[in-house]
Length: 446
Ligand SMILES: [Zn+2]
Image (cartoon, rainbow, N blue to C red; front, top):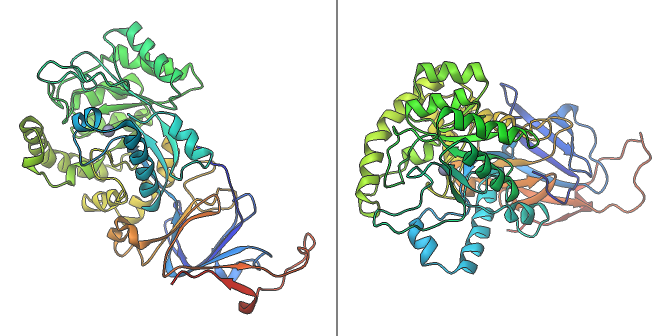
């Protein structure tokens, strides 16, 4: 999840939501040092003087939040073309550039860290980390593992196998271990397995079970043996949800059929639920879907809303993920609105998509909260998302995005200035005079 580049930064004239606490700070300041590490985040009245040479952002009364996480994306997939069209009808160079564009749009939507769960080569993680392309910090699964005829089997109903290199089939314990090793060789940070069928696979159903519990446990063990990597399970129907948790996965993806027993088991195992509501709330367009996919979605969407609302009421451990690639790219924070629509408080939805998602990805020691010692990955939203959580879903309302103090996006009404006062920096411990407005070079773009 590393990214090259870091900078000092000050953000002021904002309401602060730090991603951990239960209350917002109404008039706040955040300071990050030259390493992009937060040194102050709190009330403006207690803020230290601005250091010399710092870039300062006036948030114009907006809300400062941690950079958001999307724990379930498919950046290598287009949401508006079928996988067949994507795989067979699209030039590979164009596909790569389209993926880079989706990375940029995801970052601009306020997502500074993402976990890709299939169809994104690990090279994109390196490309983002080295600054070659701009996008969220990445963890990737590279591929998806299922059994023959399961969710990752790309054989079409007509018999043709699309043969996607990111899909691996495994039908017993040794094959599962070997499939995991292939993903690790390809650079996987997390292993993605299927424990049920799915909506967009022709030959199976969300209630069909996929890998056996002993195969799930083998995948979990094989990943653990390699620097303790976690396993994420595509699990929709009830039986496969239970098998995934019992097998030891770190996260249940979708979990549409989760019941009280599943919620309790999730809690006992300390696992996470990533309900990918963006796919559930997406309006169904019969003309653009194969009839079998339409029927499955129609049958499952209402059941899902009831089950996930019940899981939210039971306060299960939820992290935010959209399944972008199936749902639309670049409006990722609509997921928070959907969580609120199913009963979560706006503050809990923000925490689900920041500090709790950071815990799922194992980076909670440096990301997901705006507190001293953490990296300054942050977002400024125009308005107050605690009053209207839907604001976060509109990319034009996300007026500032920064990673480790480096500004990636800045649009009105936010304004930035850079302190160009001459002379050496103050001695350690000395208090710098407050910068005067006249000494600032305005870089306002409007
Ligand atoms: Zn997915």
